[in-house]
Length: 310
View 1 (tube, rainbow, N blue to C red):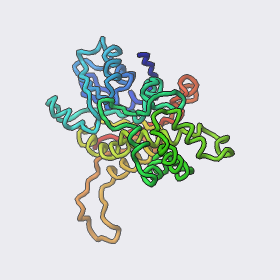
View 2: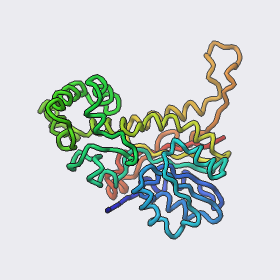
View 3: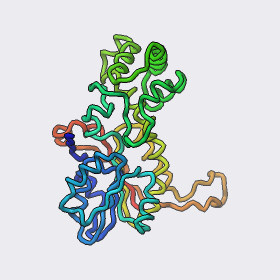
View 4: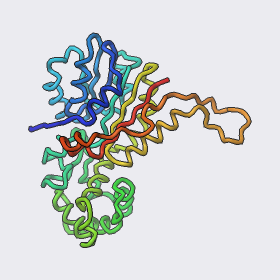
């Protein structure tokens, strides 16, 4: 398996984590281990816990981190279970956590995984390929209304209604088994003039189905408060996102965790007992430089937000 990976916003992440040589750090989305390698290089007595739900990513990480494995623990899991993972390792608090959200370069490039609309493959899109639920189940099992909702909500696709109608009509003839058959259906559903503009016509629908299969947005939203509470004082949470839906969630959660009181304005005194949990380090997200985008075009939509535990 060819597994190429260029870490996005690498310097900005390492600076943002403020890595200490004796600290404990978690890379919750190990991927190609590019970020993890730079963290591990800076540790002496510290530890790095690398988590990924993709077995191929863990296999690659062992190669990339081979000279630093005395400082690294690799775990096949989803980052949403970080508290249980740390509990099993007898770790109560950590000094930094990194999440690099979304599909990774190797998953897009590995044809048989079915993430890409430009490669012929079985409809799959599972980040954890030990799970049974896949894109095939979404495309062939969801009702027209359910398909329309996820394509609209997660893909922000204006043609969601027509695409869902065409999918349901076509699957009556035969199950939709491959990426290219789904792409053809999407192209038929979107009017010709609309297809001429902007991105690939299947991009938004594929994004929506992938998010649904892997429950990406709910996992992200549910994980952020828990991760903050697992940080030591002054510990950092760095999150890289690649589209507005993810970034909106991170921004919203950081704002909530930054609040000292959530009582209605008309209350004369605070009764909520809410305490501020973080300082927001990045008032605006950090984006890649022009030179990074030229070197690595897949970085162009990335955004990094950083919070620090108070």
